[in-house]
Image (cartoon, rainbow, N blue to C red; front, side):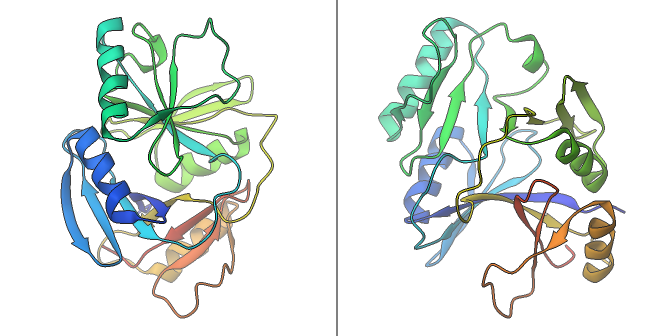
Length: 240
């Protein structure tokens, strides 16, 4: 069986503060609150956790993935933006055009996210977190479809998207041109093989699909650091 998407992990200078921003904004439950981080459990059909872990690394460049959040009306979009700003988000400019209907924001540590205008047909069946939108190739989309066992729900003009059979957000890759990779990434997937399976067997399977094992200085840990075909890092945890 394929690994499941256990969590989207944020590296943060202040993981407790950043985690509490997202907990308050999304209305998610805090699973644990320790000296080295915080984990949030979804209150909807998102299907994966958010984990916030400490880093001393300086942020360099934009993240290669971000949330696209949905809205039901223009008033609702405005209220979502205002709630995010009250909690510590800010407006940012990443080159969006004035005629585009979405609003681009950043959380307290600069991680980008968008509040999409109402009537977006691509996200019509999705919840508040409509998509995790990624900068990536068609090859990466195919890899992640096979890695997670999620079907492709979009495959056109080198743009791809997958979605869990159980619903939740879409995960998308926008195709070329790709952003240059600038240092260690601040967001990555944590995958977990199913309970009773073998971590090494799953790592070997992911390598056969196009992933590579990498060393980012993680040392002697019980997870395995890998990279997808675009070079974006992810971790394979112990079975759970």
